[in-house]
Length: 294
Image 1: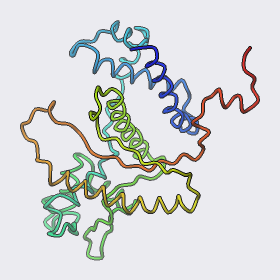
Image 2: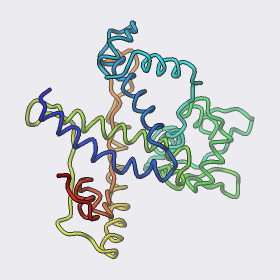
Image 3: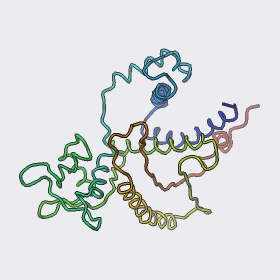
Image 4: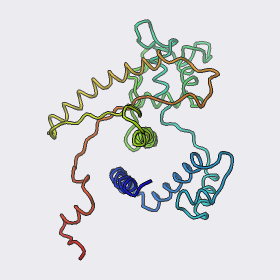
């Protein structure tokens, strides 16, 4: 890799880390804690993508990452001691997705059925909420899932005891474990796409990646109007894509795992409230009266 490419990547990295650093500082995460997380990511990616499968060469990993063999050993030891934690963030979303797309739970005009918590005979057969959760959320407790979806207003319990979905998207509360995990998951998907597109070798290659930018900065009224427009129009587009992914993609059975990929579309509105954050640290220091070194 040329020095100019490395320097440009370092500049891009600093830009990407600014909002992350702001969030971490606000939540009391120190640089040392961030550094340890970065070490783990470096070691993991070196092992997954740049080392020989089935073998663990600490010396090679140290060379690839710039860490010492002792640091690599500590990261591996720490990872082996960590208890497995199942990913919870997307499970409510998967349940709602199934409710709006599974033929057993959707009527002839695409309207999701109102369903009982479980069958009257106490079984978990379809269609029932218990069956839905066990189909789309694995070992998650149906009762806990019910309480969570009721709490956030995604579903409603009717007078006859049946359950009715109110919206097809799950939005966790601020700074909840689910929302923080969503931050990492969506960030991973976004940066995976951007990283792949940076490394494309020809025009026209790469993953779909488009940005629409306002020519002028928006005032409070215009920003609110734009947000309302996106919530309506954006949700409509996502629901159309969600339907295509459900009806236009066949269920895989014996197809090789390495020939199948996780894919989807993430749509987000970005708001830069303080454009000065995009300027360099040097520019900021100069604006605060610091003089350039002689």
